[in-house]
Structures are given as structure tokens and as C-alpha cells.
Image (cartoon, rainbow, N blue to C red):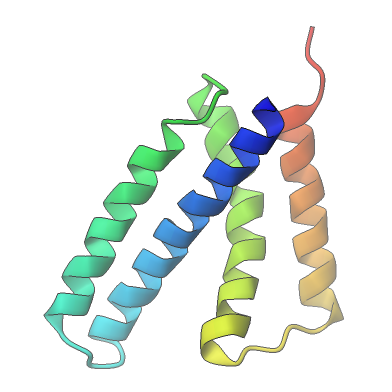
Amino acid sequence: MMVARSLVLFAIAAVAEIGGAWMVWQGLRDDRGWPWVVAGGLALAGYGAIATLQPEAEFGRVFAAYGGIFIAGSILWGMAFEGFRPDRWDLIGATVCLAGMAIIMYAPRT
């Protein structure tokens, strides 16, 4: 149950962070305006708050593991919203990162 909760929180955090960064990108780089930038900033702040809800108490472990989620999530976001088509190396790299994330977060510890 704790792993499932953790994975859901990682997914929500990824939407907030990647979505927030994308909104800032859209606002500044693609000239959608300051409302996009502000909304993106709020989403990024939400990401920081969401991460604190992880059952794991170690900041370094949670954020290190989130790196794997961020990498895979960024590829998925690009596919969904930008038409990005990953090649096999993108997919292999993301898989390696997710494996590392799982080891960091969920390996049995004594």
C-alpha cells in the first residue's frame, strides 16, 4: 500500500512539475504571456508541496528517486503535448532511470 501511495504521489508531482515548467516555457518562449508563467510558477510550488507527502522521510532519497520519474514523465509529456517521438535510446534511458528510481526508493533496508 505504501508503494502504491508513493507512486501516485510521484505521478501527481510529475504532472505539477513538468506541467508547471511547460507552462513557463509556453509563456516565455512561445509568447503565451505572463498568465501562463504565473500559473506555471504556482504549479511548480505545488510540486514542492506534493513531494513532502511522500511516506519516505529522507529528502535526498525522495528527490533522487523523483529524478527517474521526472525523466520518464518528461518523455511522456513531450509525446502527449509536443508530438515528440522518442527513439529506442530515449526509451532505454528512461527505463534505466526508472529502475534506478525503484532501487533507491523501494529496496528493502535493514
